[in-house]
Amino acid sequence: PFAGVLPKESIRKDLPTNSKKSELLFLGVMMEALAPGGRCAVVVPEGLLFGSTNAHVELRRKLVEDYDLLAVISLPAGVFKPYAGVKTGVLVFRRPAHEEARRVQRVWFYEVRADGYDPDKITGGGRPETPERNDIPDVLKQWKVFKDSRFQEPPGVEAGSLLEAGSEESRCWWATTEAIAQNGYNLAAGRYKPQVAEQVPEEDPAELIREVLGLEQEIAAGLSKLL
Image 1 (spheres, rainbow, N blue to C red):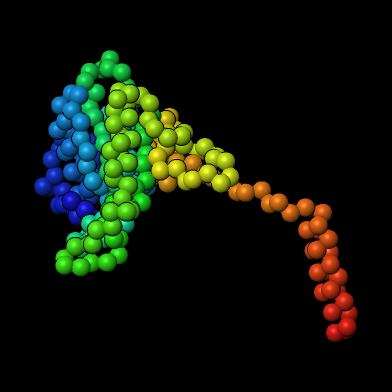
Image 2 (tube, one colour):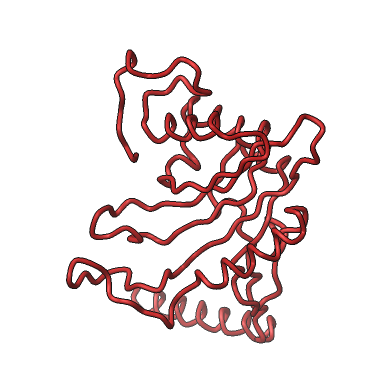
């Protein structure tokens, strides 16, 4: 249910949102429908993860504060071509079994760059397979690690980490619920992605300065000659 708008009179009054947007309403239905301890995985348009309207922020706040948001999996653009081109993500969350249940304090993020199908070509009504470019098996592998820790130890590094120069870009990372709250409950994976430090140049700084001075002297001599 992407990008739809419902008439206000047709919307249930018991949902955790006052929005008329279908993606917010359906997520609200799923949240309310979960039994204690129940878990949900749902594909959502990426705009739901960072939308700045009061309805967007409030629903995400409720998801983070009142539920256990386990994972946000960013999907590449074009996953649902030829039917839809909107960029999407997957939310995985559960309703706490009871008020005293141990709560999840870290949200796991995974950036899927390839899903095993060509992101651009459409042949025979679908996208041709590219098995050599497929992150889905690794998503499942890392999810199992997270699940086996009872969702207390997410794989990857902490959000905002600075990786050593030359390191491979992270596929997965995690952020505390406190950090997410400080970021206005923004759930876009890229917001928390660790950065790779730039390689320190090997050139001698003094030599670089001499080169710059030489260029400036040439420019000055050229201008003097022109004058």
